[in-house]
Length: 50
Image (tube, rainbow, N blue to C red; front, side, top):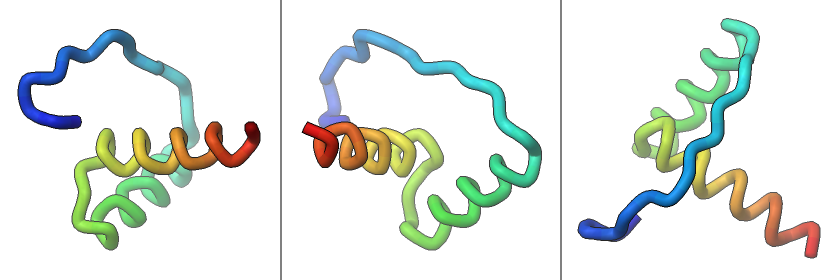
């Protein structure tokens, strides 16, 4: 998110350790933090469904 932008919400969900590892690996390959990677991927999926 752009610096100075306030965050309005938080998503929390449970995952298997193997799923967390997959996300960590994907974020690392994309050179992003897990939260950045997750935000980008989840928003792309949500917008594609419109």
